[in-house]
Length: 267
Image 1 (cartoon, rainbow, N blue to C red):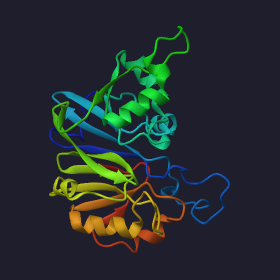
Image 2 (image 1 turned 90 degrees about the vertical axis):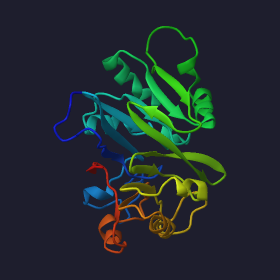
Image 3 (image 1 turned 135 degrees about the vertical axis):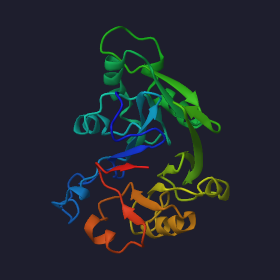
Image 4 (image 1 turned 30 degrees about the vertical axis):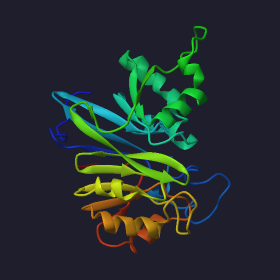
């Protein structure tokens, strides 16, 4: 993409493509107050964000997770270029939009580099084996290049640091880039990762619902962790249909907010 007037060297733009849990909100067949809400902030596509930063004279777009709703998100926010993908973990709502990368291949005429843990990339190879095996011509399939992440790496001039956490029994990755971090789908963050998350200006943190959950932070647990981490601003994401935006936002502590689809911030 061409240089943006708003995006300057050294800054990162965060665009929330989806702030919802695996069912999305509204949820199929539900008429609860949140699913019936007229507040656009209560309409949540599956969780994903787009990060943009300058790499010399080029603006780079980095997608975190290929959500089930990637096609809809791309059309809604007029995405025309994806330069790389960071994968947090291989659950359906975070990877099942991978085939939509085809459209960006058609535009860009090159493979898209994708980064994730050994486990995540292994599951992607298994679940989408058609991408990586020779098949008949026709129909098309995404062209991606998988890169295993074991520690810090450089991506388009910026240092990317994986943030290991636990999603039940599964290790997942969050990612830190400069003073920004994204960490969703987890219910335990080890001390070693907490140490890596000091000094953040903006944190996006998963918080699925009010009640305790087996594999996700509850709202209360996420708020407590946010207080420990001490980011200048924390935005909660991956919320289900029990969370009504206007009601909960009034109850949150200072510097903690609810994210919403289409939220656009400079870091």
